Image (cartoon, rainbow, N blue to C red; front, side):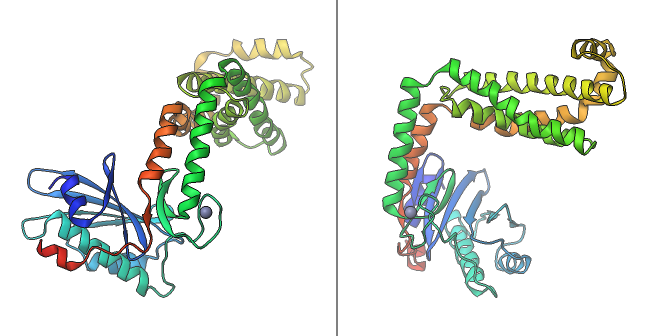
Length: 320
Ligand SMILES: [Zn+2]
């Protein structure tokens, strides 16, 4: 079964390679991986609270063997495979009824997030994909959000500056280094894990200074993060030398730092470097987001709007 066929049977919407639907007031997304003998479904529900293990177990018992049920942050993910007696559509319906029934019957019923991600108010009337999450929203808010995103992207494309962005990325790193440095000298602990913050500080600096989005953002943030990393090592080294009573100048401390052999330097910094790398990897997608991507995201939000009261695909359509 193709994604289009599956969506048509359920009366669901397809955008890119994902199906969007609402079942009994619960928004969900559905991905399909077609293989020779069976189709693998990946369904995701965003929930307002963590799904208790008991509910996960109940869902699993009502679904075919080898179905995987996981609880990613604030949601429930179900991966199941179809077979000869149960095609992808029947399986999707099975998953939808098992999940929504277990949600409803839980001790504290599990619901989708209550508040609209745009205006933070309750009383949502539709579902839409906002910032990569398919959640309840107000239909009017989706339009406002999309128009705002689109005009921001257009403005950034026209007036965003690489130069200011690079300056912002650099200043962002300087600001981000302050807490790491202070904690390093005050707590005298290994603060390597805090290096994860540096790429983020740099990215927000880039954005704050209205840097033009795209690959230049990526490169600037990476280079500025590395620069910040080296600068921090030198400052900490200088500080600790002074604290130990060596009255050296910063230049001399720096010289002595680089006089260490490479292995010794790596040995003392690898922990921080690992976290710096994690920070960079984590922000890599965000960093490379271009204005074209952002415009596409806003179009996706608009295309995925479904009323929360949409009638559920009924068992009758199984007979079609
Ligand atoms: Zn709203």
